[in-house]
Amino acid sequence: MFPRQTVTNPRLPEGEGQGTGNRERYRNGELVNADVRSGVKTPGAAKGNRFPRSARLLKHSDFDRVYKQGRRHFLPHITVFYLRREEGGARVGFTVGRVLGGATARNRIKRRLREAVRLEQVRVQGPADIVINPKKSVLTMEFPLLQEEISRAFELIAGRLGVK
Image (cartoon, rainbow, N blue to C red):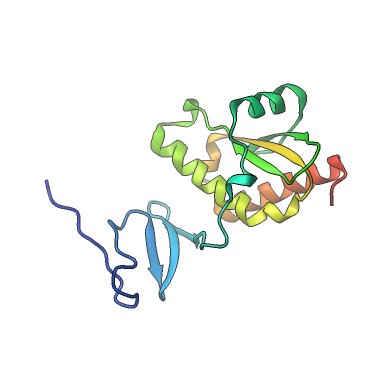
């Protein structure tokens, strides 16, 4: 077996930008996440632009509560479940079942959804728990279309919950 080569960008300080070349790509000295197979490159989650833990739905009990007590809306590529909360900001969770493919495909779907939500999270500011359940088409659809669908879902949720 061949050893993995380390990728180094000469425009970056020593020690930065080194890795196996799987996920991190640098263009003009700026970190860019790359979906290598599709060739889609999106701006990476820089240090201040991450999808924070406080904005994520993490507990199984929270997912159950949204499914049982919340409402749902069907879009062409995703199904969105949502429930108004008492206080705080919007929290978003994802359910990507095994029916959508192997671990690699499911992880890619989750990465694409997280990035789309991170870019559109300003649309829902109010207290709500949101669960996004994608369809298999999310894996192959163009990223701007996915981002537009997430945006539409957030606008719909904000309208129905009376949040601006």
